[in-house]
Length: 161
Image 1 (tube, rainbow, N blue to C red):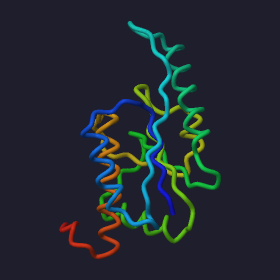
Image 2 (tube, one colour; image 1 turned 135 degrees about the vertical axis):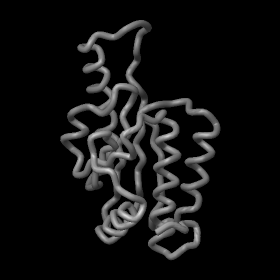
Image 3 (spheres, rainbow, N blue to C red; image 1 turned 180 degrees about the vertical axis):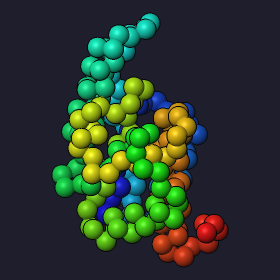
Image 4 (cartoon, rainbow, N blue to C red; image 1 turned 60 degrees about the vertical axis):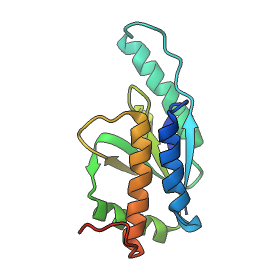
């Protein structure tokens, strides 16, 4: 199984790239994490109208959906999604591994995910009711996936519950 982290945004700080790479490196080939950066919509300066925001969301959503591999389980990162504890995430990961499908995690741009992405998603996952910078979301996702995998394997990395 391959986990595709499809995230709108480019030119992340070095600490983001290093964090994602570190946790991706720790995951085994049968649970590999692959980051694919999706080009954000071009935005002008100044306050945007609701129509512009909607157009940008739709454009980014089309790019995200085009990047979803055929047959992949689509999980949208959405503040209105279900929050999973780390142990619940490890259970989700076990189900994903047993299911044999790749997984595509969709992370929207500055204006969130397009309605088409939310409609396409088979699951919606909320990391927190807080709002995080997009780069930090990448690192959190990579770390939590590694932690969930470590729970499944009885690895000492996770010392919680």
